[in-house]
Image 1 (tube, helix red, strand yellow):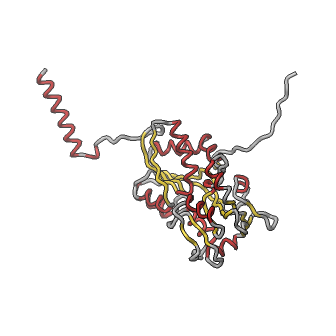
Image 2 (cartoon, helix red, strand yellow; image 1 turned 120 degrees about the horizontal axis):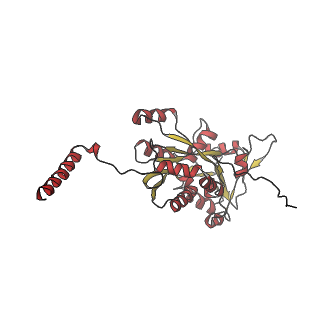
Image 3 (cartoon, one colour; image 1 turned 90 degrees about the vertical axis):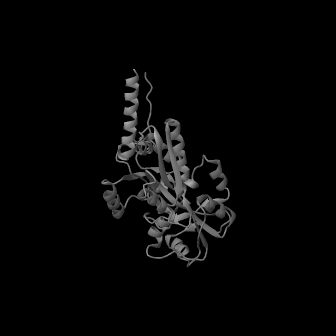
Length: 307
């Protein structure tokens, strides 16, 4: 018995020594689609709707722990490249250079896709004399030709800043009248207190009629109407909504993407699937975004009573 105990201790010590000298053979705890811990980075302009997605996901899968960081879009992609996050939720997919970088670094390219459609809302104070904007007017504001102060959701390359630069400014640069707030909530606070500014935020910050905080903001600010460039009729202006995004009437619509760096079926895949299937898509719909994976159109019908 004594020899057996000594032998067992020896085997354990040897195994421990081999593991220390060969760290690549040490077993690493892994996550699964329904349990474990991962980190994700999310563009701050999508925070309200992603917070709701995480809350419902956690209640459904209590053994999961998704640690989220909200930050500008450019920082999200930097996290993905630095391997400090498993997934990012942003307003664009990978470009060719990024896909090539990951292919060379990882021997595979992360998967990405559209989960929903969001919009950049133009917001003004309730007392503002002007709430109707052509794209030409917005360009004049953003380039500084029109001196009204434009308030953005950060001083880095957020998805809102990048989108406006790509879709409206084109080759032009922001004027000196464009200022940065700390985040989207701060944009709402500034516009709510000043009638001489125009703000730009993701629609999920101001569209949820079930959220008492957002309802309170809507007493102080209003959504601007923006020129419909795809409408056959002229002088049509639209507010951002599910309907105007779906039918292409609101011109500042944008996709909400996931980018997932996972070559095995882990928690990142589980969370992506959750957002892509019925419950997750209904959460996007309830937040007044347009679900991209599932349609929830109303259908009329009738019930015939049996004789």
